[in-house]
Amino acid sequence: MDRYFYNFLQALSDCDTRLRVGFAYRLAQKYGLERCLAACKDLCDALDSDTDELFGTDDECLREITREAIAKFGARNMYAAFLYLSGNTEATDLHLQAHRFTAERAMQEINEILKHE
Image (cartoon, rainbow, N blue to C red; front, side, top):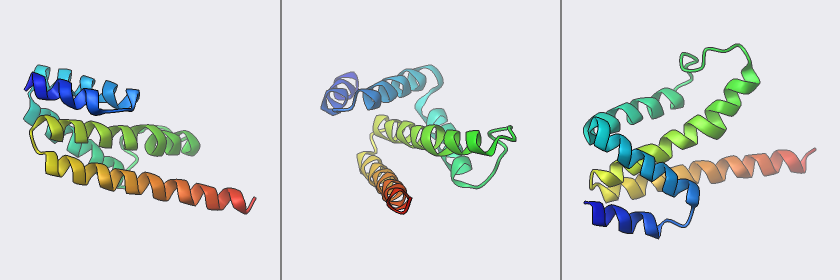
């Protein structure tokens, strides 16, 4: 598995993505892949629901920044990394495609807002 993991890392062009996958690999070694998959999936699900339990702050702006820009997209990338490590490349590809679609849609919405200002 280490050889395949190394090849996967080398294929990634984005340095930040490489770091996330490397971090996912270390966590999977420490806690076990199944536990990491379940925990990261739960986090993604919680972030996709409109719960405030994860953030514990009354600052709406900070909560939105954390949720959309950092936690939500970071958690999705980590989940894709764990899917890859589990050998489920089809699910990895589908998950990343959905993630890219969501990010592109968000950028389009931001561009539309900026056009009207």
